[in-house]
Image 1 (cartoon, rainbow, N blue to C red):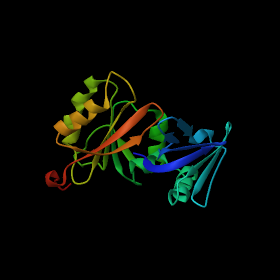
Image 2: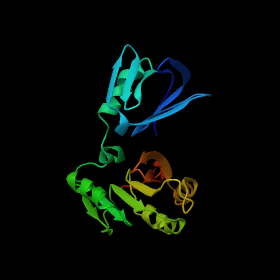
Image 3: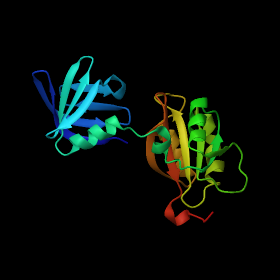
Image 4: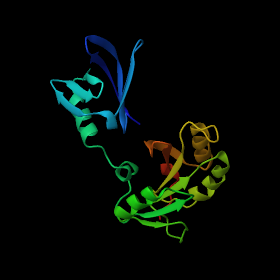
Length: 206
């Protein structure tokens, strides 16, 4: 989830009062009469001074009057976390992959020195990543949930904005399996990752 702040946006000579949302790969502004979306990839420069966040783009500069948030947001934009960091994968973590994942994700896990497998060996993993492409794949959720212990996590990765499977269906499947949804991460331009864990009262020790 992103960070939201009430602010004033200056674009050229125009001024707009509304809310800004800092996501993992873009900043979004919304007001009653104006909307703006700036992906990090389009930002030519970013700096913060005096409570103002100035963003230079190929279309010109915009200024977000954010107060105390300005420097924090500038740092997050200039030093974004890697996907592995956002997912909380620790070095040497025991990871189970269920379903098809792109080679770049597997490479990132390898670079993080994570131990990956596609089968369970009786030792509860720190993380299970379950790839979901259609609602039919939700049949694997209950079995995956049974492999969790302690604070281990099940990440369900599903496509954005597809009628074949929706966020509501993913959350419902996780809750029916006795899990609690605690975090959402932009997994890729096309997919979202939802993190599920065992409720505190249901945790067994590994």
